[in-house]
Image (cartoon, rainbow, N blue to C red; front, side):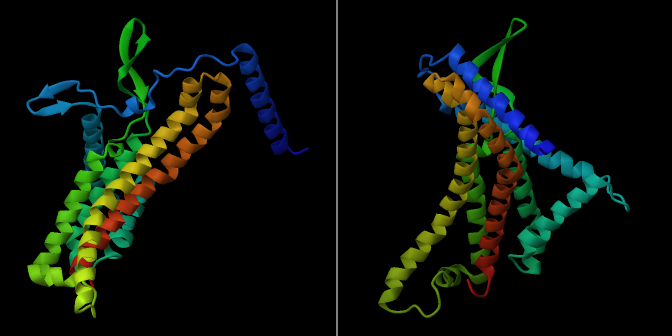
Length: 296
């Protein structure tokens, strides 16, 4: 028997014995209907500075903004002729943002103008998503007693899991590409460009409202795609990591679903966090480039 098979059989044996022990020791406990997973995303005001309410949503935005700014400035001031591993990774990321996202969707003039915005947008969303998978003591609704001190419970939260953040970013992109379109073509020329060539007569009355609606749908698609993916990922991780076992009162269920929660957690960090930032930035570049393209 190969070593790999022995390891897999040993893991399965421990896994099965653990499930049997939990069933014998605890069985089915009472349901905890008072546990509400959505409270993990509830924004409780910690303090107020004038009209600004400080909560964990604001904290995560500040952290993502600082990471975006500080890391790029730190690396930019330490560039070397013979790059180390960190610089190589940053240069690879820079090439992805410049060539694949920006230059791939707009001409050179537009690319030079909008690359700083697209790059910053990508990095901010990327950092926001990644920070959201770090357990931090930000759940003010639950307390943990450590050495006599009551501190907020650790939780997973991402600024992009709050619909307001993706909506504001989408609004900025929406205003930006429409302003660019009007600037390049004039107001009436831009409105005319929304309609595909060859559409005339009565069909114009049908197609034009649809094209206007589809333009506004870009705002919705940018917002919902980012918000829904990050929120759903966090909720599923919460359920698989023990939340479902608490709600149903089945300890063994937590033992069974925990490996799935770990796998999903790694999947979200390794792929979803980067993919959602890439999609948002790429669509933003497409909308900006399309607003001034000859064939709109």
